Length: 282
Ligand code: AHG
Ligand code: MN
Ligand code: MN
Image (cartoon, rainbow, N blue to C red; front, side, top):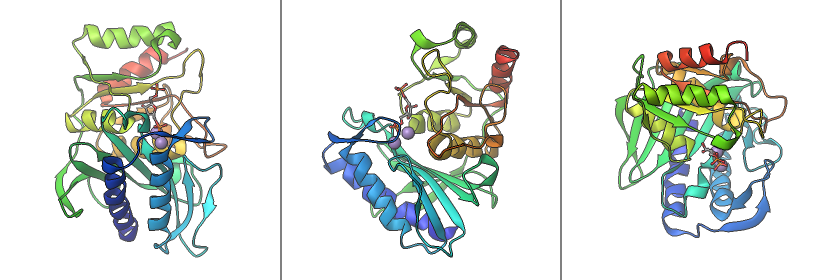
């Protein structure tokens, strides 16, 4: 696992440089989800592929930016599902973006996720790792591109932040009622449109709710299990919070295809209980 973390660190340094100095425009290609890829999406994907190619324990890669999973080292033990650049449409407005990695064994089901890592490219570059070894831990990159341990991260039982994803016009009425009830309890809106910085903020500030629900136009939500949802579900659970699809634990789900999406809710235990109450029987 150590060599995988090191490859992520090397990728992070290279991706940070690309974001800082290279073209933030679109390419002419679309990915499997139908998103037009930015040049930075493609470049970040290539960087990550190059770095994992040097790690013999990686058997296969599944990227948000590639239609199919691609084999790497036949003798390897781990499958890596990753989003090379999350929130990439925010790169041109100079907001924070990220990379997300799920490290799996055997297949890309939630129960086979062994470790999860994300990197935030903001005013600073930070990396968060969760695995079976110890607590959820955050590292900061120094000016030479080396990461140093900064602190462990834990969620309080209840938070103050509310990050409601999706288009409000397309929300189910009971979902709108849930979001409104949190605001009327005093929760503050904190939403950038990038799940990495939005979930990072909730984690650093101790708690709250991030939601990307099923909607009238997209009943299965937008966010992808393999690359985005499972890694964050793992990190939130390990930090003492919870992550559900509205009713079930996200890590009990398995995608039929690597690009499958699911509604998702990540947060402190108190907020997740509220979600369950509102969605029970819907
Ligand atoms: P990506 O840039 O990898 O396609 O992911 C963007 C995701 C996620 O970061 C964010 O929470 C969500 O898309 C926002 O989507 P909408 O603005 O379409 O609701
Ligand atoms: Mn993404
Ligand atoms: Mn992406």
